[in-house]
Length: 139
Image 1 (cartoon, rainbow, N blue to C red):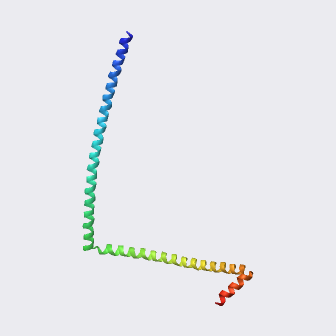
Image 2: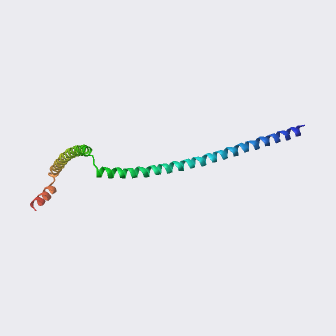
């Protein structure tokens, strides 16, 4: 009876295992089909986006041509005034930066001169330095 029970359990186990394999294979097939469908949808969306981009570029070209051939004078005037204001503001900013850099440059030159003078005074007591400085100054 144990042998019969063992064979029965083994047969049931094989049947369950076969059913499980079939389910796994069916799920794998479904997953592959879903992936293929997603790839198709992705390709279709990419084609749509490319068409839309092409259409947008074409419309931009047409719009640019229309604006150049028939400009709206009020809009051109407003845009020009805004651009002039922005350029004026940029000019003022750059001028202030230039003035600050000039002041900084002058301060650095003064600082270098002061350090050079301090160094000369520190070395002035050395006899050899006096002689070389006199020789340089007399040249």
